[in-house]
Structure formats: C-alpha cells, structure tokens
Image 1 (cartoon, rainbow, N blue to C red):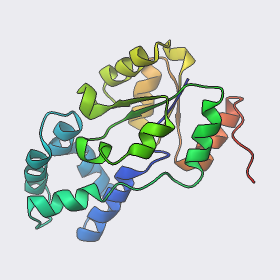
Image 2 (image 1 turned 180 degrees about the vertical axis):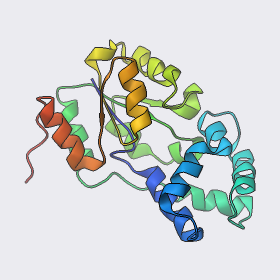
Image 3 (image 1 turned 135 degrees about the vertical axis):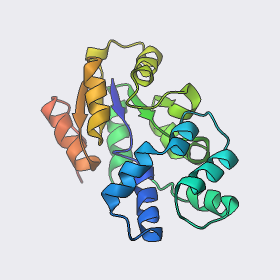
Image 4 (image 1 turned 90 degrees about the vertical axis):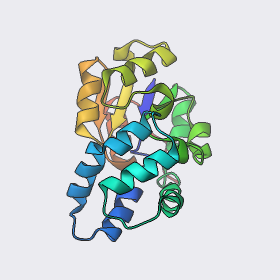
Length: 197
C-alpha cells in the first residue's frame, strides 16, 4: 500500500505562490508558516466552516484587500493539475499496489480535483473526516479505510512534521519533494518506477 499527497499534485504551493505575489513583503517561508498556523485554514480543511465563513475568516487574518466572493474565486483557481510524470507514476504503481491519498484539503478544492479521485484507489481527505495531518486521527482513519497494518504502508509527504507523525504510528514514511524524489525513494524500497520513454 502506498500513500501520496501534495508531492504529486501541488495545490498548496500554487496558493502560496499567489499569496507571495499579493504580499511580496513576506518571505515564502513566512507565508507557509502563517498558512500552516492559520485558524481559518485549519477549520476549513477540517470541514468545520463553510466556504463563505472561511473566506471571511481568512481575509480577517491576511491583508489581501479582497471581497470574500472575489477571494473564493481566486482560491478555487489555485488548483492545478498533476506535476509532470505523476499521473504516469500512479498508474504504474496501481498495477501492483493499492495507492491511496491522505490529503489536507477543503470543499472548494476537492470539488475540482476529479483527476486526483480517479488516480487513486482510496482517497481520505481532511474536510470529510474532520482531521488533518499531522493529527494521529487522520492517519488512523486512513489505515482503517485501507484495512492495512501501519508497517505495510509506505507514506510519502513533503512536510517533515507529517512524515514524523506517520513514523510514530509505524508507517514507512519518507520525506520527498516532487516526482523525482518520490521515484528515488521507491527505488530505495525496491519498487521500480516506470521506465522513462
């Protein structure tokens, strides 16, 4: 069983880039830290508040000078397709493995991520289960959905705290960024990625 998150389908980084364009006075690392600590984001990605409530709360936290409706339109546009080579890698892995996605996401983005739903055998998303990585309950929910023991699951994520939380539960967890690092980690596990043509 394998898990892949934002390392293959980069919604959050696209959004962070937009925020950096709008807030050039803030460093990218500062924006990411503020995003991860955002109460509005956490509540929305746990499915606790509506998109409209999220927009108002987020705009109260960030100096973006947008109306909530305009912000939600822009926020929906943060969704981008798979990174190059990612869909091919997933299709190859699904020939021999169950491939799952454990994602911190929200109702607005999930509504337009058909390619993600179709590319995985199992999708576990934060706004539908009420828990986000790195909360233990998010991983436990995913394991129940998979019907798998933790040691039989390979978990890949780009954020160190998500990887650390997965390791605490006994998952084979690897911090990777992008498709090439994921393929390298798979080779290290004895799982051959597809041959490049």
